Amino acid sequence: MDRVYTDDQINKEVLQLLLEMDPETNVKEDVYDRAINKFILMETEHLNEEDEQVFPELRKNMNEQELATLEDNLRIAKQVAPTRPHPRAPVVGAKVLQPIVGVLDRTVDAVLGRQIIE
Image 1 (cartoon, helix red, strand yellow):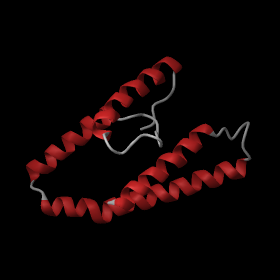
Image 2 (spheres, helix red, strand yellow; image 1 turned 120 degrees about the vertical axis):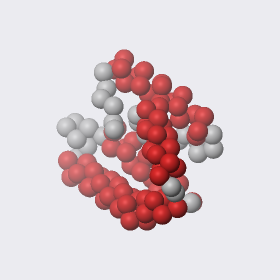
Image 3 (cartoon, one colour; image 1 turned 45 degrees about the vertical axis):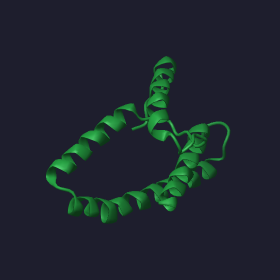
Image 4 (cartoon, helix red, strand yellow; image 1 turned 90 degrees about the horizontal axis):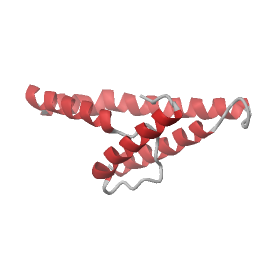
């Protein structure tokens, strides 16, 4: 599980860096492109691991009702999750903090007219 947290933390930090970069003004285009390509590679690897290992295990070990409940819980979690990466946020207490940060993110997004990252 430590690797999962480490990978998640790295992804948050890279995404935050990408959000702060403006390829039009303050960063060389090739640096931005390389950072984007690296992030895409990391996320693709993560998604493939879920598709090939995690989801099959869940399907094998959970009944239909448990899977439906999990799907509902994931849908609810997505609705209240933060809309931006917060790489400095603590892992401990995330269940309590993330919905609060999600509300704050959505408020800031609305005030600033920012597009929510899905």
